[in-house]
Image (cartoon, rainbow, N blue to C red; front, side, top):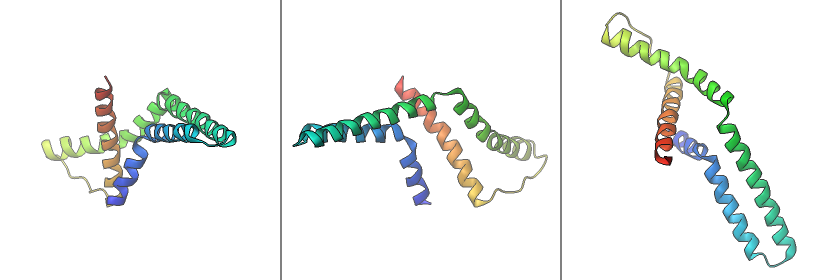
Length: 123
């Protein structure tokens, strides 16, 4: 379980990880002792910046938002059904999810709460 969370934290913000690599490459470029090393580090910086720009453009895309919503929809439907129909109205019972599906559910919910929180903090 701990491994799952650490993996998710590593995937949570790839843009900031790339930004850290860009900063490291710029420092290495400044500290380079030969022109060849400096040029290699500058090329690395350009490649990392291009990768960062692609991630930024992809994260703001409409298709990406639609796919995220479609992946979250079954979880929302399940939770609403359990909470409203089964618990509040006491009109039925729903089979429990497997442990793996609960992990997926928590990841999806966690993503949306973290995404919302980060969006609020950026404003």
